[in-house]
Image (cartoon, rainbow, N blue to C red; front, side, top):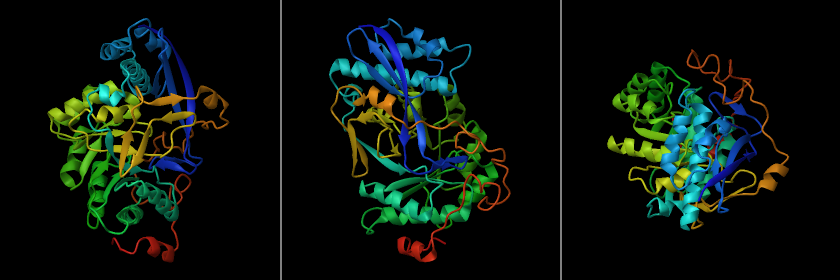
Amino acid sequence: MRITGYRTLTTVQEWGRPVGDANGVLADGVVPVGIVLVDTDEGITGVGLGPHVEIDRIFPALDGADPRAVTTLYDRMLRHTFKAGHAGPVFGTIGALDTALWDIKAQLAGEPLWRLLGGHDRRVPAYASGLDIGLTDDELVATYQTYARHGLRAAKLKGGLDIDRDRDRLCLVRDVLAGTGRGPRPGLMLDVNESWTRKQAVRYVGELERTLDLIWIEEPVRRWDAEGLAVVGRGVRASVATGENLTGLEQYRPLLAAGAVDVVQSSAVWGVTHFLRVSALAHAHDLPVSPIGNSPVGLLHAATSVPNHLTSELQDLHPPVGVTVDLHVEEGAFVLGDSPGLGVRVDEEAVRASARRPGPQTADGPNVRPERAGHRLLATRDGMAAPRLPHHRAPAASRNEVSPTACR
């Protein structure tokens, strides 16, 4: 069996509402999703979801090779990017190709990837993550009521710009997930996407922890600041979660050596092999792992086979345009199917025919770091962030209806 070529597509995730974080908001909720298709001489095609930047430079590492040698080919792709480096979207391209190879290998074996990798339980615990910083209070409640109907009992909110607003929003979501009050207390996490300094992080989280119990605070300071992450971890009760933007085990080592991370994360776009290696490294330090991403299907399969998986991020409940996935969500978990491989199918005609296209990247979107990030003296509710993040508050009567329990 030999790899004969590849094809690339770009589809979109249609959220139907604003999505974003402390760095900015996409008002139309249309997010690009890259697709890489790897073809073989036996008619089996593997699917990887992720970028395809500089794929012409990376693909020669795979061309003509037996796709079943997945981990060997992964390291070969890293070697092909040795001089220019394998950070950022180039690492994502390697991850997409790697995921497609795992898909081929499992299809050839006639098994779902989770079973090929040694998984036993097809259920993968999940938490809700709505990329919700741009929502009004009423929209926030409606969004998490949908997650609650699928049994989700833990949620990660986006925040970091206004303590009072974040407290109110966390309380709203806590009460939605609590439902009738039966069952365990809902879990709450806050993701601030590297928007604070060390002291800001300790002060901000400490204030929230006067009235709330946070499971983790995610990316409180810059991703590479091992000392700073450790300072935050020592200064708050919540765990520190980070790692989704780290590319390569070499970037994790300083954080683990400094005791700077409590929940080790890995982004779906970096691929299955990377996740398996990160999980082994974390396990050697007695730390849990948690996959991140809107379409983490490859990592969900892999998560069934590692002993230290904690929970996986569930963003939109619908797949990207033109993509179908053999999984569903029930009772707070992803439930993987029995289709050989990843269980991902791509309708290429539907993708090409779709009229929806992501707009150009702008300075007010979440992928551009604001000029004053980490240097804000006061909350940004009515200040410099107003154009990118308008503050919406529901009327008091409406808030009381959905949040009878005061958090303050």
